[in-house]
Amino acid sequence: MIWNSIPAQLARKNRKFVYGSLKRGARSKDFEKPLTWLNVCGQIHKVNKVSNPTISINSGDESSAFKLYMVDVGLLSAMG
Image (tube, rainbow, N blue to C red; front, side, top):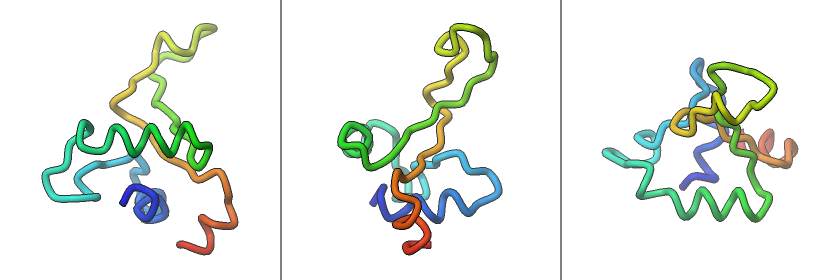
C-alpha cells in the first residue's frame, strides 16, 4: 500500500505523506512497521519536515510531517 501510493502522493501540490490516502481512517500506528521496513531496507527515503534549520538539524525535526521518496527514480517514473 505505502509503496504504490508514493507516486500519487508526490504528484499532489502538498507532497506531505498522508496516511488517510492509503486507507480511510488510517493512522500512523497502522503503517509504522511497513514504513520502517521500507526505510531500513533502503527502498525509500523518509524526509522529515524541519521547522528551524540550525547546526543540529534534528532539533527542529517534526516527525509527524514527512515526505517519502523512492530510492530508484526509474521505478518512480515507471510507476507514475
